[in-house]
Length: 107
Length: 447
Image 1 (cartoon, rainbow over the protein chains, first blue to last red):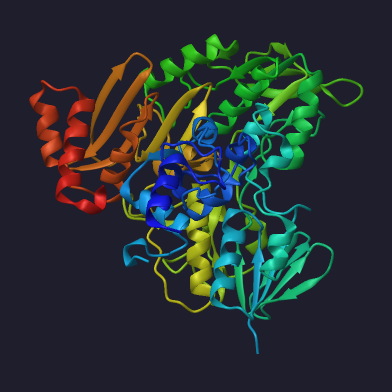
Image 2 (cartoon, each protein chain N blue to C red):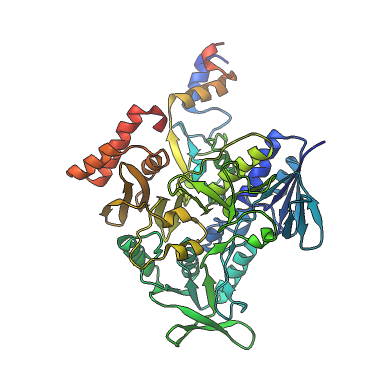
């Protein structure tokens, strides 16, 4: 895939993820606050096991995430927050579209 | 030959230890003894089952497939005795399980009330999933409930029951809500919100007996002044205790719980303890303390697992932290925060630790100062020991919680913050945020 096309997809959203909002961001947990109650996943409209990400302290990278913010709002312990776009995420998404793990290496 | 690891308890500490052991020892035999016929579940999540925020099945945070994947053997049974000479654990049903390394991670169980009648139907606890299911069923038919106990669990019981439409009466032996943690202002704030949620609070009221009807169900409670109070449900959350009878006839040293060193080792070789049933050195109080907190149990279970596989990993107990939501109010509690008043008895407090709390909360340094700010239903209280922040309570708006937790956990010298607070001019919140920004600029790791 050409760089231009990839950039275009990055901006407009990939064909694989038509529902992905344009604003880049993701849900990030603080594992030390989580008590694994599962309220997050229960309130996820697309059924992402958010609790498993929270347990491991990993950002929710599930491509089906529609960024609705339900899990963040419903968590009773302030475990989750919405991290808005930064260059790291942009580079990651770029790499995903390009199919290249290191976007800085070029084609 | 592969090592035999035996873990008593399938909660946060036990399951985390099993996972850690498996990461480092792919061939070891790992057996988990559990008294409840379920995969691991979130005990703090039970409160949200009671408020109906989630169905009961949602609290299971591991599937049986997870145990298979990690090749963990689950044994259903109740451990009754540890034989440290033969390295065996005896179960109630007569079975004996051998071990090379043993982890005691039984957790703690709710204490039944010390007065007559606690065997009656309708005396309920928010302690196990079976107990919670029973509580939910009974709440559907109950008209009037009484709740006793002074900690988070009792408050969660009152919230859940009132939320389910049961007329809820909260009986307190003294005159302040959550008295081991809250000062008078914080207690009044929660009181206002609880009353708005139609919880009836009765101070200086003590149950002395539970009286049943002919069918063995709770009918009323008798109070210390001789009067009776009709109710069909009694929610009990007066504290939790680890099942120490398990180690009673062994040389394993106990105090209020099982004493461990920084490697989570008990006084007996090859025997470890973690979670609610472990008493761990705390660098603030300079004593061995008990936490009944999920994140503490996870951290201790992980440390125990590392040491059980032979990694020498010293565990440093963090400042106990809890963030909870009660009646829509966010409350964060960190470190040494006891607002002790004259006549309060520390010994009694340590005897009655409740789920979701830490013994460290109930203490304060020998000399301390407090800083306090309130803005409507948002409050912040800081407990300072010289140039160190040792405790904090944040109610309502939570923007200071992470910063305060960092200052406490990393024992940051807060001399400049103190000076700023003393100088006045800025609000407490402004001063803390300014200091936090300065710290983040100076120490990038804090960001």
